[in-house]
Amino acid sequence: MLRFLKLIVAAAVLGFFGQETRVEAADPIRIGILGIDNFGSVAYTEFLNRPRAEGVFAGVRVVAAYPIGSDNYPDSANLAAMWKKQLLEMYQKPADPKDAVPPIEMVDSVDELLKRVDAVMIFSMDGRLHLPQATAVLKAHKPLFISRPLASSAADAVAILKLAEEMKTPCWSSSQHRYSGGFSGMRNHPEVGKVIGCDVYGGYSVKAPEADKFTQAIHSLETLVTIMGPGIKQVSCTSTPTTESITAVWNDGRVGTYRGIKEGAVKYSATVFGDKGVSTAGIYGHGVPVNGVVPTHDKYVGYEGLATEIAKFFKSGQVPVTAAETLEIFAVMQAAEESKAKNGAPVPLPDLWKTSAK
Image 1 (cartoon, helix red, strand yellow):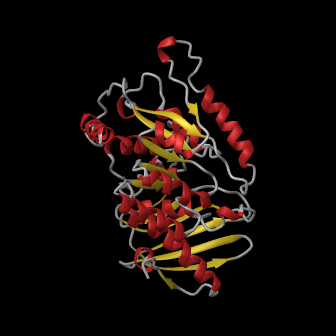
Image 2: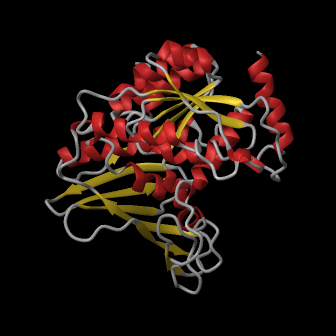
Image 3: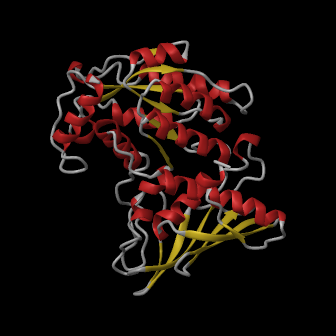
């Protein structure tokens, strides 16, 4: 209860998504990492453990990690070893002693991790592990962020979010693409106006590990929903050796597409159609285009947008992406697989929350 009150107090100090007031970190919200073979374990910790942090990153700190990998995910052991080294060395030899940050403690079990922290981030590359890992965290009533993918299947995604509701413990997941300004800024772009349609494109590896096959399109589909908003009613999918093509129809008749690039040059962006104009979107990590020109020399934000939302979440206890929107994206992927099996026939979007109860 004391830690929950700390979350609420910190949110009040921050202004709950408001201005960035300094929060003293003498007694920070303690965050643990479960699974470290994903680079996100390093990328987000670099923000959350900033020396002498101000604003949103003050008052939170990664204090412990369980460096578990997956025996069934390619190169997991090597990746875990690499990121473990970086986590252990992070901010440990600052030029200014005032920039020293307490070292991250490595533990050897989930139970030991949960004893040391107030909240958890899961960064296991193998999404098949997320349900059992999340189950332990949620049953301990620790607020939880799960790096993409939330799970490796729609069924596991539903199970995690239903358990979070049952345990009354906040839990969410998001792609870093959702908070890249070049994508999120297209919803209200002055040169585009009201978004009528959007064509998103991104990579789709034909050699993806088995654990990733279902969720390969997740970053680009999240970009599509970020720009168009939720409300998809129907999906069709065409798959060829060069392209995975998904067409989604919204309840209001708008149409959005995803082009999964299997062959040739790969880039993550989109074309956005509006009532005022048509524009390319920005590219990942950069801002929105101006007069049709995509900026590439502006400040690169990369993981910072999502890191900011993670910090706000741990302070407020409020999830920025609803379970319904998250499951809509999983429903799109499930409907796309069904459409592909039916030679591209349109498939109504399933209500995963309701159908899972049957």
